[in-house]
Image (cartoon, rainbow, N blue to C red; front, side, top):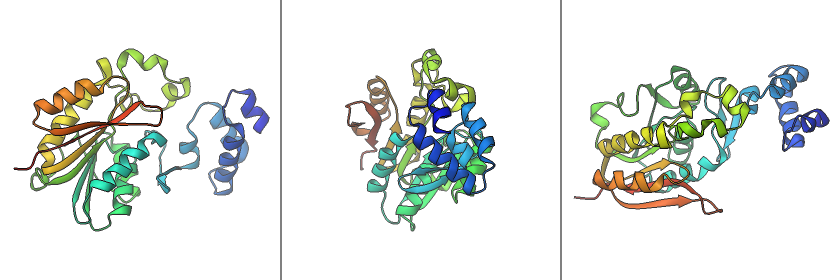
Length: 250
């Protein structure tokens, strides 16, 4: 199996083979069937039915965006700023990975999530997340607005003009609306910043994942919204991965 995977261009054929064998042993299907699915480009998370995220096993249904390892830093930072009994809102939750981490680390906090995709909402609910169907903060109850200690969002932020650069298996399988961020990739990022400004309490923090050179435009928008203490979160290679801002006290 490793030779087949290697010949098909997989960068980690040994890891892929181990994952497929584990999925078969857990009852996901016959190994030949699982290998065929993987060779077609289907995400390993859909085949296995789960993905590790911050050390937690998070279920991922077919058709739902697969959480990326680089998003773990945003989730861990959100845990740092969420009080034990605080309130968090995770927008564009997908399978609910960030919300799952928050609930695990802060079991006494209130964690609410939203997504526009009913398949994603169902998946998040199966992961134990209080997920609501709707666009960004639209489904958040009125009594929760202006009370959130933390707002997180991993929105679609791939520039529409760069979608063709994504790996073929991603384009062929993962939901386009979970990837396409419109021109420059900032359309939904800007709306998420606006939503966060409505949801945060004074002193509350927003964390938005982003990429490329988007941080400058989003920082300007956050400043215009009255948010402050804006900073970029970078990975070990110095690439912008997220942006953080705070609603001022008083």
